[in-house]
Image (cartoon, rainbow, N blue to C red; front, side, top):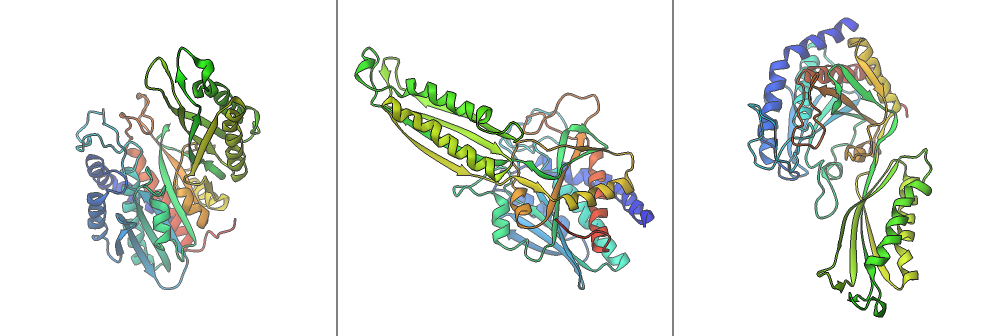
Length: 404
């Protein structure tokens, strides 16, 4: 049995050149969220070369779903995000972005390349070993950005039924803080609920020379800011991950005019729904301070993607696969941070897990996610392919079962 798994590793290694070709094409031609038209066309063209795969296009507008099925059996899915970021690339390479101001700075070129390779290997295994069951390969648009309705790509794909009948789902993410030959896993909540707030403080305003004749929302801002920054420090348990960060403050038009309002915008991050609700309640209390100072306020909180919850059982599948095929690979058990990941919508619907795949260049400069210098050591691509492919095959063969 292990011998067959090692054969998959060998076949993944044989695809190293193709993986690089796919990834570099996507890197050269990045497209922003909800605009991934050429990306979807390219992915569809590559999938169409795989024997036995059924392709659905236009899912959530620019998404693509490939399906391989044979007889009765379980259904498992794998998801890759395909959108880029509004960042001007600063790297110098022959595969740099050709789209000015747009860049794959989060690995959404590597993820679909790995899933394409996984689809190819799974299709061959279906044919060679007569596997039973179904595998869905989900290429999802718009992970990075929401539309005017506050929704990213994952909820739209769910609404269009891509998870119907799916028993479990897998995903991976590039990890620039770990070297090739490493992965990061974590059970339970591993990335954050992402919420945005917009508030306004209102006073009467007035002449800067006569502040006593009116009410000053800039003066009111001081105690409100103190209360906002005190929410996590004094209201949330130190054992619970949470952040309240202020990103924008706007007020005033001239040095001698006390404005009538101050606008504040920021983000809230948390793992648990209980902390999410607690922070929202405390935010309301912080803004309401202005009423005791002669002012008033408005507050709007927009709930974004839910926290990513990794299923512990599926993490065990991944760990066992890694131990079987890469016994010397370094596995780090730690949450991924308070960044957002709309794969959380999918793991809220069905059991699923995402792992982070080490991709850092050895002895290189820091190339963090969402920076103009982000890049990956492509040696990680075949590793991610072998882990995902073997995990899926083992599940279809009944070696793994689902329990929460």
